[in-house]
Length: 376
Image (cartoon, rainbow, N blue to C red; front, side):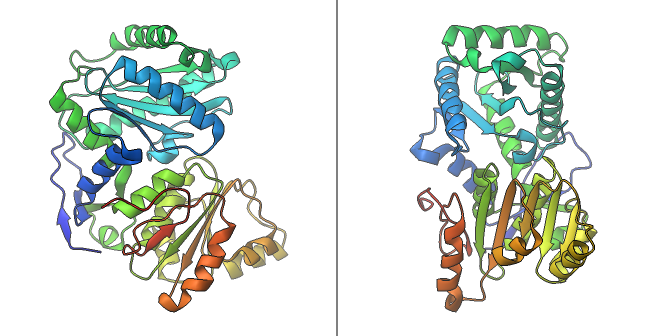
């Protein structure tokens, strides 16, 4: 996995824990985000790519509009920004289609929630969007020493249909929000842009679920590039299977996935057996429901299964899940191989997933799918 080292972070937050990384995780994550789909530095980059047709359509329109609005930057998109970017926010309304964080070199950072046309004045959507903006403000301020604030607003699909409509709605958002912000906090310079961008990526990549970090309250860890990719590029999927070799960070990723999914709805962490990783998860309060297979079977036999579970993160097989009659909206299967001798059986199991992509075979972590291997 590589050696660990401290990440140099200057922050106004005097309580910020020491942040560590394996190898050059911070640098690799930023390089990957800006080279994704062979985009070159100095252009507007959409990240991550959504597989669902509606999401693809909206993100393509976004990219066109933002490229005409600013020449360089990141458009971070998600079905739920709170889940993907690890933010505390109000529940997402059903009519909110997509959340967007625009970080560009010349314009104020802007948090948008795209809603259906008939809900463009929805109070719930505006409260939700405001809570996202507060979450982004807190996350970025935590990892930078820059005076920072972001704009925020709700837009409809119609606002993306034409450039003038998009420009007008962003202008209206700036007029409405800027008068409430500290002077200079919205200003973006080239130097500030790079610091804000790095702070945002750090806030997404940081985890508290490394056992060493839990034992040492003075340190947090950045996910590795492989963990970051699997997490951010698959959180919108309905079913994901992760293949993990021993000691490759698979359990850290499992806990982080469960924790983030729990921000979007009741999540269950289901372990095949009682082990130190489950005990760690319980100690860290990873998500709302945590059981071993035997425990959940007992609950099932008594007719006392938790109600309203929306997400399932498990290392149990599909056969075990089917017996319980669980039908979550989202399921993450973690498959832990003992070594190369398990490769054939493991790959067969991975064929059941909806969206798959492969990571560098040397990392020990894989989530199968439609993306090419990482570029060197």
